[in-house]
Structures are given as structure tokens and as C-alpha cells.
Length: 85
Image 1 (spheres, one colour):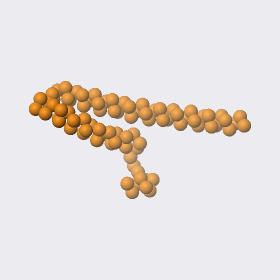
Image 2 (cartoon, helix red, strand yellow):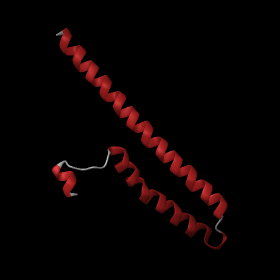
Image 3 (cartoon, helix red, strand yellow):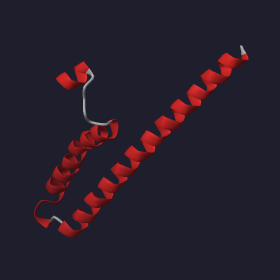
Image 4 (cartoon, one colour):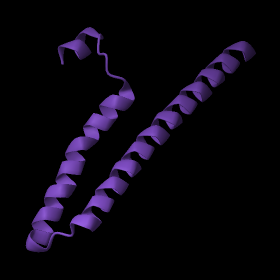
């Protein structure tokens, strides 16, 4: 937390978003364990967790790309609007 306050954090925004998703994965695993109890389908659960990780990684990438494109669009609009005035 101190690094964030000083602005000297070595973690990228993508890494922090990925770290933020770990509790979600743990929650899904715990819920599956509670729901299935003695009949836990390990094969299906493994594929489900893998699919969930891939989905989260893809959504992080898409969100980062969307933010970058939006920032570029706003910068172009601000630059173009200032030249026209």
C-alpha cells in the first residue's frame, strides 16, 4: 500500500486486475465444494476452473484494450477540437 501511495508501484494495471480476480476463483471453488459435497466432479470442475481463468484473462485483456482505445479517441478529439478553435 505504501508503494501505491508513493506512486512507486512495480505492478502493472493488468497484473493488479489479475490479482483482484483470485478471490473470485476461490469463491467459485468453495461454492462448488459446498454444493457438490461428497460428489465433487473433479474432472468437470477442473475444466470449469480452467475455462473461468481463460475467460478472466481474456476479459482483462479486452478491458485494457478498450481503455487504451478510449484514451486514444479522447486524446484525438481533444487535439482535434483544440486545433479547430
